Image (cartoon, rainbow, N blue to C red; front, top):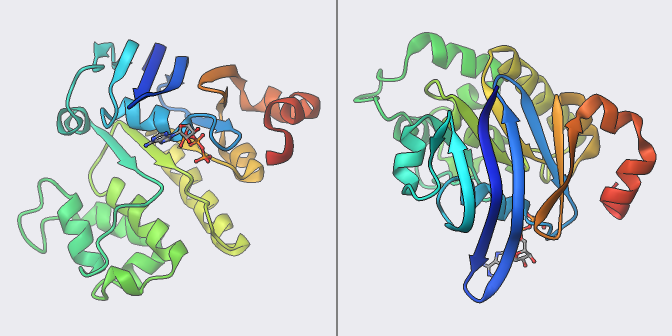
Length: 239
Ligand SMILES: Nc1ncnc2c1ncn2[C@@H]1O[C@H](COP(=O)(O)OP(=O)(O)OP(=O)(O)O)[C@@H](O)[C@H]1O
């Protein structure tokens, strides 16, 4: 069953026609990788799902419900967390304050569910270590981990994350892969944009590749990984 489905989605940004009919399916309980060269339309697709841009044609469905015309807060309230490339953490606030802000139901410092917080600390030890430090003091990789932690501070049905491995040192990438493997095991459905093919192959169950505002290939990650020629023709130098 597909938790999220895009059918024929077209998006214009001002005078620019960016998405030309995106068809994308995100199966429930799986991790789907959205790949493609720079400028292919990956981020625009994520923003259209979240209602930050609105589709001019086509449909976005979540859990069978048409969400194409909903406002972003209403889309998020359905149980979708979105981590943009810019991460959206607040530099002047502490890590703890960042987490509390992300937790809709947290009324005070103890408002985050204890078991969940322990689980997040175990996934991302830096979040615990820097709990009372301003987020602005964190390294790029640690900020990335805080951004993902904010997205999972409460149970969500779908996590949408734009390039979690961006700018990370190899050791950090491995930590991130481990964390996502555990997130996957927890049963949450995940849609990731990735440039790092190693990261994508290690984690992806299914894959969709974009080019020029369309999905030009979709299928299992295992089949895609086994076909180097296909990878080269779709991703080219991005490999
Ligand atoms: N605000 C905007 N105004 C005009 N054009 C835009 C805007 N945002 C994106 N675009 C254009 O839309 C196209 C798709 O951009 P998008 O960011 O979705 O690609 P991407 O696949 O995420 O690329 P990258 O991997 O480089 O982040 C690009 O040609 C980009 O220049």
